Image 1 (cartoon, one colour):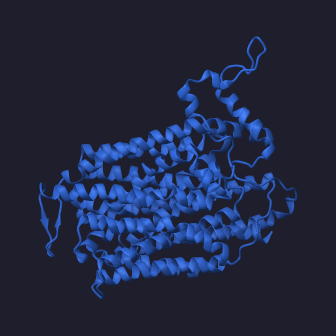
Image 2: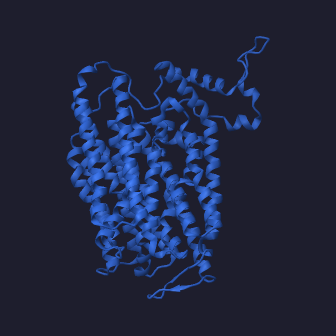
Image 3: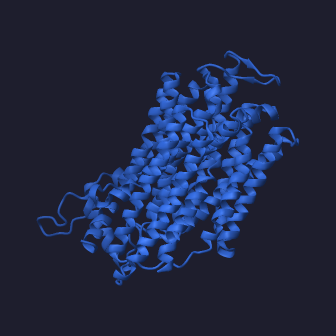
Length: 557
């Protein structure tokens, strides 16, 4: 009983961790100053961004550490990595110390690793404490990772809006302070208990209220950015919303404790999908084939009908070896031999990762279009919209069977805004176009990044999520390298034909639409390929989603 009540406090702790550790989203706010202080080119600046994203490739290390170390130890290891990585960079940009470029790259790598470790901690907290509503818990928690840049902008504006180095200082100390503040809540974990059907429903209703409260937080931050509010009161208001979330979870804990006596029955716990006995696998495979076949199972002469006969040769190859059920555990070897996984990988690589790279380059993009004085505003807008995108990933679970649609179908819908945004940037360099495109890309990338955690568990097994998802997100540093390098090389080439802005330290900045127009054209084409990959994944998996839905109807009429 105690564990069931305290899990809401654990969720609040996870939200606070995420709200102050999305430190990669504010890179654009200080990247121009970092480039100037270090005296590096755009390509070298891209390498710093790539190094930060490369830290996510080491997320698997946190999963290994969690097997041998207490959770609170992993939290503080992550906090100290960020403190060291960002803290030393702040000293560099302030001129207190001088470090070689290669060492600054290592510091960026360490800072990126810190973010990945914090994310893994939050995944574990949500998965362990909310087995019946795992996707909702993950969506709510991860969504707050998108508000970090907006929160830090309010704090910077309240202290000194002209000092972009403050972002690095906040990146260093705020995650550490948040870790100290929530570690007591994390230590209160209890093993999860089985829930009755009524308890699962009440839990879903609580999540709906928390999502509404979270949406209010995002609207508040978005309004502050639109109105360019810079007072200390606005910063306190944002913090109060996070405190309100903590208080609200305590209220739910008290109500749940009061209603505890009415629940005595135990039901099977799981996510929106449920594990199936291995003996049912053959039956499931047959049902998947039935789902895709519009013809009867037998011919008029009584002979058995093979659904594959109806398909062309290409169709048979395309649908070969697809998933036969949701939630089936995949080893690493099985995973990398799945066509479904590589379609999923490409969709993420050409969609969500591309949006992350756009965010990393947003400072230089705004500067090249003549909006250098508004960089922090664009970064805040991207952060707030990323938050809303992450929050929207909870829609499939909130709707349930009322408006059922395969999660892979939602993935395709989430990918669509990105090519539209880049085409808009190709056609116009106005401030309105830049803000609209930034909002679209923030929504899209935020949705994909968050939905992918639940989707990985759904498609390839919840137990293997820690390993499999870290394999999936190896596409982020790869995309950061390739997409960022493409943008940087085109940027450097266009400096020769642009209206050059010569800075005091002798470095040059590209000014004009041509600086990134060709990059936007390439990125729009790549993002369209991501939509196509997502749609192919949807075609291969929609039958098994329909099968799982029908099975749930029979099990829980």
